Length: 385
Image 1 (cartoon, rainbow, N blue to C red):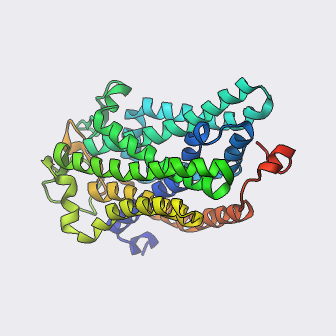
Image 2: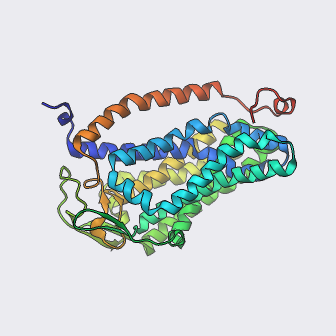
C-alpha cells in the first residue's frame, strides 16, 4: 500500500486548511508586532535616541519573523494552487503596494543611521511607518474583500479570469473597515511589544496608544461583525459535496444568502469561542497594559489576533475564496487543493521543518531577551541601528 493512502484525502484537505490558518496566525503574531511597532514609531518616540530604542526593539528579529509570511505564501502555492493563482493575480496591485511598503523596511533599517542629519533620519522614520502601517491596512482590506466575494470566474476549461479593474474597487467601505480592524489589532500588538522591550517615556506613550488601540480593536471588530450580519451576503453550497473528489470548482452549485457567514456558529456551537477570544483577548490586553503586566500583555494581544483570524476562517468554511460574479466558481477546501500525494508530501515536510523553525525562533528570542538600553544607545554600544 502506498504510504500516503494511510491518510484520507479529505482528512489531508482539512489538515492543510488548519495549517494554513496556523501559518497566517503565526505571521500575524510574529511579524505583526514588527508592523505595529513601526506604525507607532513617529508617535511614541520623540527624540532620535527614543526612536532608536523602538527600532532596536524589532531590528534583530523582524527578518526572521517574515519567514511566516513566506511559509504562508508557499503553503497557498503548493496546497491550494487555484487560490494562489486567483489571489496573487487578482490582488496584484494590492500585493504590489504591500511589497513596496515591505521593501521600505529593510532599506529604512539599514540606511537610517548612515547619516546623522535630522531630516535624513526623520525621512527614514516615516518610511518605516509606511512599511508598518500600509501592509497592516491592506492585509485587512484583502480579508474584507474575501468576505464580500472576489470578481473571478472559471470557463469550461477551468481557465481563471479575474474581472476586477482597479485597486480602488478593493477599497470599498466594508473592506476598509476590516483594514481598520487589522491596523488597530496590530498597533495594539506592537504597543505591547514596545512596552515589553523599553522603559520610560517610550513605554508610557506606547501604553497610551496601545490602550486606545485595544479598545478600538474591540469596537471595530464588533462593528464589522454587525455589518457582515446585516449588510453582506454570505455563500453556501447548495449541492452535494464530495470531500474526496477531484479539484474541480465547477462541480458544485453555490448560492448567496443573507447571514450565511454565521451558519457555522449554529451548526458547531464551540466555534463561537473564536470571536469571543478575539474580544476578550483585546480586553485583557487593555487591562494588562494599564496594570503594567508586560508579558501578559503580549500574550493577551496574541490570543486576540488568533481569535480574530480564526473567526474569519470559521465563518467562511469550507470556502477559501468566494466568487462575487459566479458563485459556482468559488474555491472551497474540497475543490481547490493539490493532489492527495502532494498534500501528503508537504505534510511530511511541515512535520519536519516547522518544529525546527519554531525551535530556532525560540532560541533567538531567548538570546535577544531583555529591554533595549537607552544609555547603551547613547554610548554607541551593543545596538546595530
